Image (cartoon, rainbow over the protein chains, first blue to last red):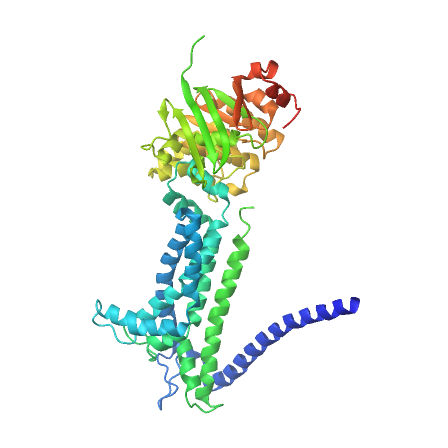
Length: 291
Length: 254
């Protein structure tokens, strides 16, 4: 008995340790390759140059165009996903009948299960032509369509996490609001949403982190042209797309071009790592406010 | 004897949660500026009944009523009645203090703000008046911008009373307002109820028989969804008419 307990305990310990080791390994690879990169290209150049052309004869190593592309598509995605996701969460919580909620929630989850490559083609072949009907200057590849479709993809994440946050607000607060003569709308947006704000903020940050790391949609629909711009109508490139581009290409292993993907990768990692930590911190700080 | 006007009235009121018959043919008339206590064992329907006066049960799936509830002679379940307007007339204080996670000031003026009142001096005046009336002003006047959640339970409950008073209702429903509080805070709430009845019609649900005796003018005893007995509190506690009332107030069940 004791021996088998020990073995099970050991296995549990091992599986926990393995995940930690893998994480450390990934960070180590990222770091060692990027250090090699930064020994040839200074961090100042990396952060201040306005062009990213490591694959051209005239090499420029400014990450900012890729960062701008990433932030632009992410911003568009959140601008789509937050209002829609939050409205859905409020609707499901305050208005929808229990039966309807049971139908609509799984359907929303389906949005999250669609492969991102399908979203990418949807952006390229449906959303872009549709938008070109209104916006004549819209390029065939652009940040706008990719961002919008990415936003649609993130809706279930924001709506379901926000809905959990809102439904975790004590019933007594809703009753207090109704008891004061609040309408449903006043109760929802004046009391429930503010009371659930920490959870909602966390959902948005996780959504951002998802959008920052999203690859397929932007690779297909946003074009692959690093460009330092905040204009959503022209082709851009995100950090993730660049990594795909180089990984698929015939860049020689160990070359400086090859190492650029690690530099880009670590930039991306810093973004998502920071975002996840912020969300963790917010959750911890505000979680038990109502007990 | 000066006859007081009837403020709240129930006529042949039946209420159901789905198939469960929660209130059975209730008839009662409560006088203006009077405190009525609802007593009875758990599950007897007293809270359900209290919540019909501001239609707080509306959001419960499967809840429905038959019969009439009249406020100043007007049927509050009539189609043209707006619940949010009704609740400005009929304020409510809940069992557990439930201040909003906002500042003390924001809590008190919440009801005025949702009515669209934005003038700062009007709000400040109303906040002070309500906090004074709920005997909380002296304790919080220097920290109006602090979170209401930092107050003690008893203070929070008086804040909830202030919040309810701020929109000038004529009726105050209290659902076991002191059951989650310590004896000192309870005494303060009871004192407050006594003072408030000169201006408000108060209906209070309580599990505490002594409390009913101390604060109320009339008492209604509920049992299994029926209104068993309704009379002057003194009368009920000294010479109850019904056997069930007698058993309950002498502590034989409940």
